[in-house]
Amino acid sequence: MGKISTLGVAMIAVGTVSCAFVGATPSPRNQFWSELQRLCGNAYEGVLVQAPPGDTTFAGKRLTMHVSKCTDDEIRIPVHVGVDRSRTWVLSQPGAGLRLKHDHRHEDGSEDTVTQYGGDSSAPGTADTQEFPADEHTKRLNPAFARNVWTVQVIPGRMFAYALRREGTDRRYRFEFDLTRPVTTPPAAWGSR
Image 1 (cartoon, rainbow, N blue to C red):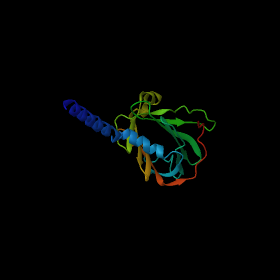
Image 2 (cartoon, rainbow, N blue to C red):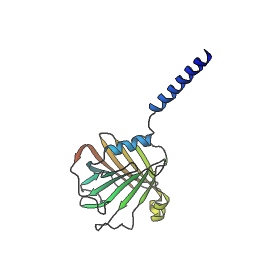
Image 3 (tube, rainbow, N blue to C red):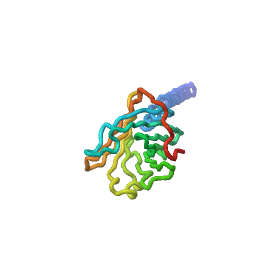
Image 4 (spheres, rainbow, N blue to C red):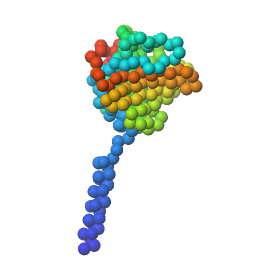
């Protein structure tokens, strides 16, 4: 009788552990990644919400993002500013964290001299918001970028936001894209791959 009781307790313990794994909540990073993946193939129009005083780089221009290519490890999001198709946000999973890079191209597809800057998520973040402080490559590329922190936010079914802040300065940008209304897919980004 003792062997049967021991076996029964062991089976209950295994069943409890199995249920714990099946019902485990994904990490905030994994939830965030899943929400980005759900946007794949769609394009959305956005607005400039914040810019440094006197900066007119994006003012009055149509902003369109296109979640154009998604794999398990990389999501490419070209961002069109009016007719300028030089920018692509590249999010990836190089390991346990997330990475944001900015791929800047000329109209002929060649890389801009200021490209591939960004950083890795420094904390788990939340299911809807991840922050990316400037990495070493970015700091070497342009020392002014050393205090940059980029934020990407996804509010499912409502909004995608991209923001930049330069710590210790008033340099702030924020773009918000309306996820409730997909728009026609724009032309491919310059040098898209």
